[in-house]
Image 1 (cartoon, rainbow, N blue to C red):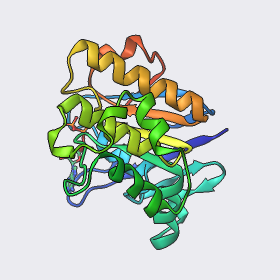
Image 2: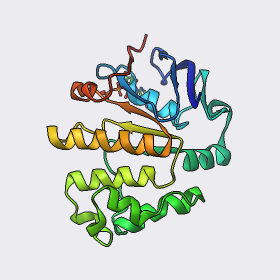
Image 3: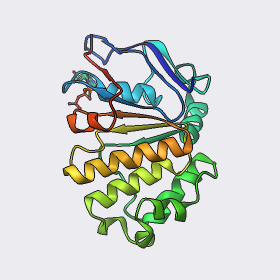
Length: 210
Ligand SMILES: Nc1ncnc2c1ncn2[C@@H]1O[C@H](COP(=O)(O)OP(=O)(O)OP(=O)(O)O)[C@@H](O)[C@H]1O
């Protein structure tokens, strides 16, 4: 088993504790996390990324329990082994497209995938030297996916990657994530309320908060 989360609970300050369904994934498998607004989907993603510490439970990636790690060790592990596609691209405006990807290599201290090859695969070869400020929304989204893939992580987490995209781009982004995850043997978890995605990834868990 590549990825497993068990008995996860988390209480935001002053809120009822949230409980989460267990997840297990093999290499190359994909999963959707569905749930209504406010049910705890982003909280779960942050727990799976080790960005929040669970009150109880464990998150195991490749045999290592993130919930038991902290500080620099956790940051380095996340940088090497987890690729996160946030809802907004959060690219560094002072850097061009290629430099944004190279930053991922720099911070993770991992060689990962060749940046030029990755850009070409994502249809961004002509944009390597472009300022990220000149990209369309769809292009910026693909750059943020390329950045998440650059270190060849074992787990890819994506938060609502299709919410602002039209049908065609939404379909393409999910195919891209699925294909890349299976190519590098990563597990893929997509948090979404976008029912369109179910046709491409039928495997899902539902977060209810209870
Ligand atoms: N930092 C915080 N402090 C206190 N409560 C929080 C905090 N972050 C989230 N919550 C609460 O925890 C619950 C779950 O929030 P979360 O953002 O995980 O839901 P979500 O399912 O991702 O929602 P959406 O689909 O609207 O993005 C909500 O009731 C929210 O108000």
